[in-house]
Amino acid sequence: MTLKPGEWTKFSGGGSNCVEVMRTDDEVLVRNSNRPEEVPQRFTFSEWDFFTRGAKLGVFDL
Image (tube, rainbow, N blue to C red; front, side):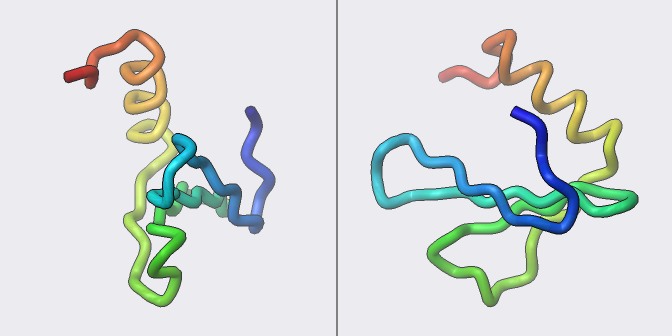
């Protein structure tokens, strides 16, 4: 899935815990959809790329 610049995209595992992600001109923002008023986590594009590649490979699986 490609993130649309300036638009929050919601991801859910089927429960009530959802994460929203938004791409800006120079970073990726991540927030809890149940608490959108809180400050989002910020990642550079290279940090986000490293994380998503690792997730796809199962690096973070418990």
